[in-house]
Length: 330
Image 1 (spheres, rainbow, N blue to C red):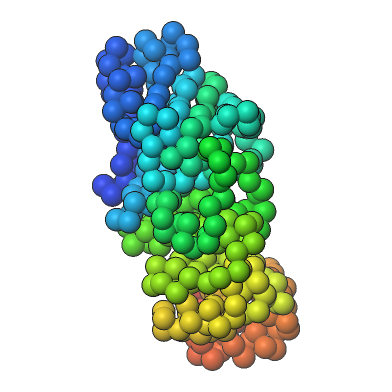
Image 2: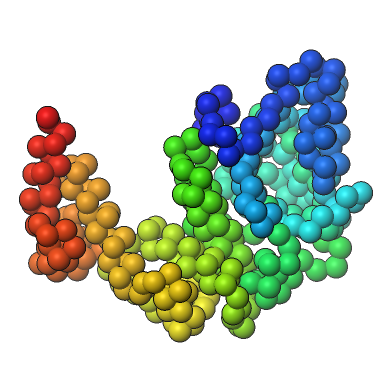
């Protein structure tokens, strides 16, 4: 996890490693840490002394974000221990193969995404150096938001496209993994819930669902997903409430309500995100022109950028840059 396995992590992260155990006890303990998955070694080396680690964070509703590192392990879902979850994953190192029935998906580091149904048979066989990011989603709330079951028959595995909201979800999970030890628990919880929203609303898009879900958790996930989308694309001056609603697969009225429940408007949130980006760009560079920073922050011109910046911070962008540069030199 970008070096996080060896770092000192906050207590709210669960970090488990077989490397702290005698070799003869490692595989059985790895099984005990994954009660909903049937695990078997693929090589004698793995059986005799599995070297594996897991780093994960759980929300109270059962949503879980994690990263697992292991080699030469057969992980079977949904056969002996069916569980009410979907697992959304992406390999970030090594490789392997995922199978369900006759379906087979080669897994590597090219950004291929997969979805596993914990109720249906499916398996992942990992090769040397296998590491993946994953998000476990409680089944019923996810189905309610997605409005349809993405699986059919006994198929327990889907190969899903890495674009749209699902592509943004992967960027979100990578960012969480990169900054794992730096986030406070409230910030981490919000980031994981945003990723869960991006995945479930992304599946909703893939499935072509038309109905909207009128539940507090759905509005919260919609709000967090939309904010993450704004952060990813705020440099685009054509980003509007209408385009955001289309991107997340809801009506403008539904989007407006999600933001109103958080005490803000869509327009105010987007402006704040753009201004925070502008602050970062002003602080990080002495040489970029104000016009360039305005465009990179999503403002159509320097004049509108300067007016919005002064209204928000009671100083001009040029004064902010000078202030932050003076502070850093002291």
